[in-house]
Length: 372
Image (cartoon, rainbow, N blue to C red; front, side, top):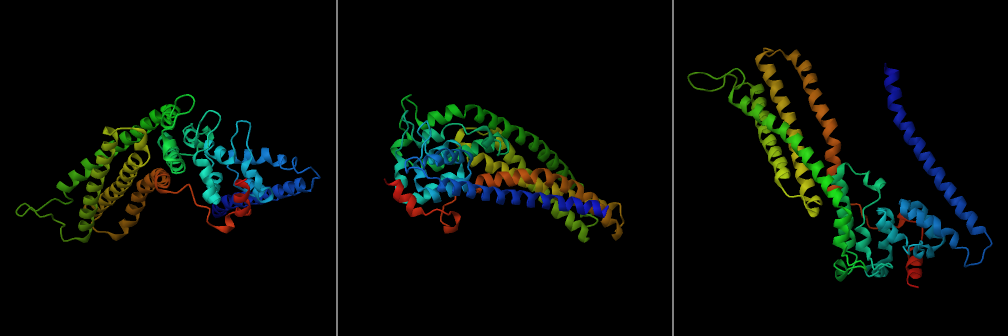
């Protein structure tokens, strides 16, 4: 059994090592291919064209290492465009390539070009980010609500880039960026609302049940009360104090969770609400529900020890093991969702390119070529 358990622990480590090895080998292959291209004896006008298709596809796939290697060898790749007239920054916006989009920080004042850049249909950068992200990018997020939240975060980021006048500027189809975003994300808003309501409804039922149980437990305390004074029989016992505190925590936490979930169910579901308001309510509700469930289990365990175990200390072991089962089960099921919500709401996906070691190319070469 110990050997099997050891093998199960080693397997993920070997998988990580294998992936790391494959990653290093892929980088070496990339360097070799680029070096081979550089050695080809081609006219100056033909040589850069060999990098055009790879760098544009890398921008679509958010393959930062490929773009980094090509920009180091050919700084002019920053201005390569596909058949639709989009360069790597525009493609990064359309395909939600965060790492590639963050390269815009190296342009400094040169990035003002993108503030008023338009395509053949008069679509500025906000029109482009208003398009629905590719399905493989949407699937990286948990649930439709977080998918829509990430889309809104992209819109907020690009809105800081363009000139204020371009926020309401129409394209040749007489559509503003907001109109494009609303049309493209109509179904995602409906799916996000449905997902939010489903989670809130199921969790509110649990919160209501916990509130009812712990409220009843607070009135009918373990061991009962003295008839003449009404004071609980075990009031001087430390275990009873633990019961009282955990029961109170569970009651207040479950009530808070219930109110949060009810506010989600009765609130509005506009696009902007999915950015912070609704996810924040869901985070508070889920955290409060997890606290109330844990506290309720502790309260029940102390009641079990007080009333039925006659203060036998050896009974704490089986009670603790049994109490750990529902707590661990709830944590295993809910903590990943809470972590995803927290990272998606308060994490930063657009990191500034301030670290000199984050890229191999020379930013000065990029800026000089971009100004041509």
